[in-house]
Image (cartoon, rainbow, N blue to C red; front, side):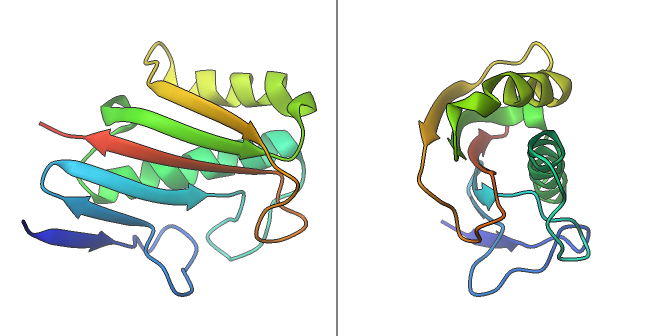
Length: 125
């Protein structure tokens, strides 16, 4: 099965990993965080959640998919206090589409200022 690496130019550059791998009709997206195209972390939880979802949307578009093709998400947050903000951001991006989802509270992420990370699996066709 052919595999395609997805690293769109409108998402921050990666270091040692790919934003996504498309294998057949399945797209495996690496965890997305609140880092803008310029490589800087955005301020605030809602802003980070929105940026992570925007990054995910752009990666899927580069792979020929949309957020409606997402079948599973795994979201990591530093505290469950962010739940309402995450739900709002998720609703804005996913609308009525409700993929299977897991939410996990973690002690920390790759950088101390990061508050959320979202990974996804999408299936097209």
